[in-house]
Length: 123
Image (cartoon, rainbow, N blue to C red; front, side, top):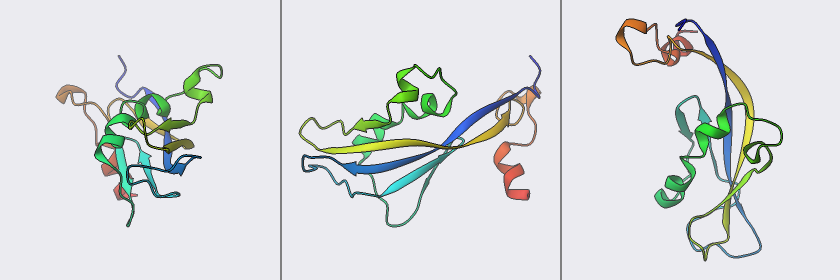
C-alpha cells in the first residue's frame, strides 16, 4: 500500500435539538461540538451527557466518510438520545471535507510521517 495515499473525511457539527417531548437528560438546544479528523472540539459552556456521547461515538466515523446518496448515513441527520423517555436529539451535519494521508495517520512505525495534527499546527 502506498503510504502517501490520500483520503477524505468530513468534519462534523453535532448539535443538540429538542423535539416535541421534554428532555430528561441535560440537553440544551443549540449547544454543539465539532469533529475535526479524530478530534472532538468542545467550546464553553457546551456539556454533553456521557451516555449520549457513548451512543453517538460509533456513528461519527461512519458519518465522516463518503457514503452512497441512498445510504441512510447520507440521508438521516438526527440521532435520538439513548434514554427512551428523553426528547433530546443530536443533529449531525457534514461541514467540510478534509484531506488525510495514510502516512500522517497510521500508527505503524515503518509507515509514519509527520502526524496530520502537527502539520496543521505548523501552518
